[in-house]
Amino acid sequence: MSMHNDIESVLFSEEDIKETVQRLGKQISEEYRDKNLFLVTVLKGSLVFMADLMRAIDIHCSIDFLAVSSYGNGIKTSGEVQVIKDLTCPLHDKDVLIVEDILDSGVTLSYLIETFKARQPKSLRICTLLDKPANRRANVFADYIGMEVGDQFIVGYGLDYAEKYRNLPYIGVLKPEAYSS
Ligand code: IMP
Ligand code: MG
Image (cartoon, rainbow, N blue to C red; front, top):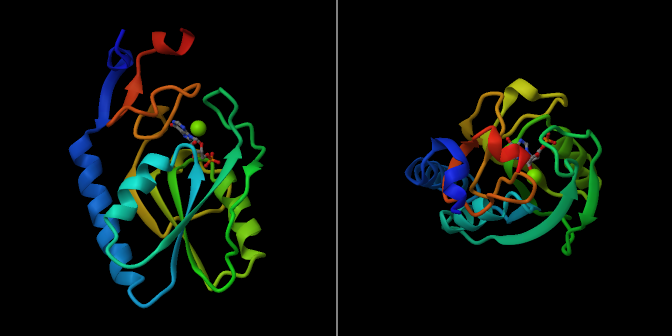
């Protein structure tokens, strides 16, 4: 059966997402024009956003990836962040922009910010496609925000539930029965 059948409602369509990514890309391109832009992405959820965002940026940039885990297969954060795969490049003297899929409790990002600051980048900012302020536990603010979401669990465009639905081209809410299967 198609994964689309598990979706109760579409929150952001492909068109909504495209517009948002273009807007962010344009803004970043303008503000980093004379800088040494280094995009750092948190796998796996941010992979899809990163792939589109970097193509909406028209200045030189380089990229790197790291992977963290704080969720397991659940829908609530466990509050523990673990680096599963670290960056391969140094951050020293770079204008680092962290690219995130969603800023939820903020636990992941506050941990990353502390870790990255110690590596002495020239600057360090955050770009998140989605901001879920209702759930915030850490004192973290994004410099670039795509869209705001309420206190609900969403999937698609990189976001998963139990590693599924990352390949949905839009962002939506699951039907209750999809959680148990
Ligand atoms: P935080 O540490 O609570 O801010 O969690 C950030 C990470 O949790 C994101 O990068 C996502 O992988 C995951 N996450 C938070 N909210 C959702 C959601 O609604 N759907 C899917 N994943 C989510
Ligand atoms: Mg996840």
